[in-house]
Image (cartoon, rainbow, N blue to C red; front, top):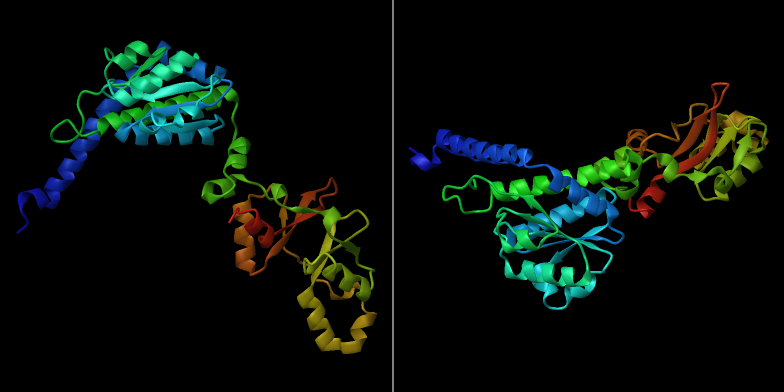
Length: 332
């Protein structure tokens, strides 16, 4: 028999109560979004430098997350630990920057010191605090109210609901600024080339080798021309195209070896059309990198021809995307 505090039903109830308290805190925070929030967004948009986010303890961890979110959505930002700032890191702040200071109680000595330094430089200060009568609230140029009815722990003293609300305020700022800047999926993809989301949003056209870097050969090309095409760019494959550059087939180094083994010296009399694979793997230039990688893995190959549709409906070769290049670009 488990003690009551370890009883599954009791644990489940405790979890639900915590989530309910945090949900209530977020509902309250929503009612507090008003002109100060709009002012904070305006100040971030007008900032000519970087957004400097500062805090200590749990507020510092929240600040680090907010700085990361801002940077990843097109607003250059970094986290400045308030304690480290007092020991030389003030030099990281510039007069063109904007400061976002986070302190739930609003009286953290180190955070207030950073605020004082920023104001002396003429740097605008956005405060995020749970105490609207605190020193931070009084000194900031605009204040976001991160107050909560109570934190979600049994004592109402451990940063739980308050940190959830602070993170949500940061997310609200980042998203509002992002939309105001006209930040799109394509912008996001450029900042996130790695990871599942980045691979989904990034297109192969951003990583392909253009046709100027490899050979396109017509079907009438000789065996020797095919051999040169496969070997000279060291790609191990050559595209066979018609006069308009439409993809007809491909010849790989493996195709050459198999042809030589089967036909020996007779192979040297063959043309590209005689030995090409008529169903080469290809992707449209706007295909996501993730989809391209998946296609290569399924087919057990290391490159794909990149094409675009012509008015005739045929696919014209515009490049080649290689697993090697994706690795070199640290996409994988």
